[in-house]
Image 1 (cartoon, rainbow, N blue to C red):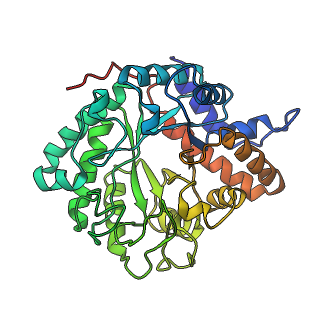
Image 2: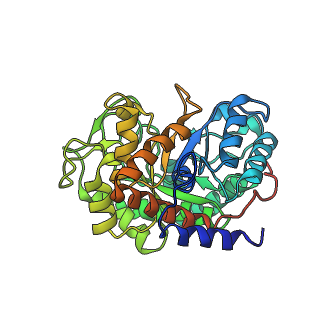
Length: 374
């Protein structure tokens, strides 16, 4: 494993070089594209076909990592075993991701022996940030022990609409006050970092004021959003606590040039605002691109193409309702064609590849010690 940092350093440098054409397709380009793909899978045992598929895709460099849903978690021991198998076949560390916010949003629960945590709203109500950091450290220790290295949290949406069906009502926001949100989100990030688990601020540029759920369809926050919702992102970037940022599927016409395009597919939002104006240099990850707000409004091909143009680095397909095990291959076919026809598109892929390799350079190659349930 000592050669791993050199391998990743070489990969980062290689992202700046021309891509050579390989027989039967552009193999190096397809490996770069593979690092942009994070997928969910069906199954919770080594012999399940869905798990065998992602194992093969990991071994062949077709995916950057996997996303666990509740269906994938049979026991803590079983999850640890699956993750060790996945990491063992990949040339570079895989991102092993999960949504483990606390409260209603937990994939690992006491039913499988995992120590549960309170919701964001409960944490902010009952703990000081220092105590919250300790709480989230315990959460992260459990995740790391199972082989997870990316938790898709914290939520930094302001609780500006307590009746929001997907944020406020579920207790997923810390507060309507941006300072409080920043303080507790920082506790989440730092508690996880202490155990080698990456985090992702979500949902950029703000989902707290919505009256609709993007899992089901379009949510337009143009009449309810304010730029105060950007404050936690600015605060956490300034303190070095923004590792990844997740783009939301909300429409927000307050951002010049965004018009009626979801933020996750909007260059004006992700390049113009997040990168150029706010100065974010890390990895941008999409929310699940199979959510209703996306699949009800555009094709798979348009979604993938526009997500890359918009500035996302990691494309998430949770494979929840209608799983498609061949998504990585379909994405590679599509993006390879686009890249070979358009130098600017190729440059975008190489930018993302470089960012992802830099992110992965800090990931431990395997899971740590077994998780110990309380």
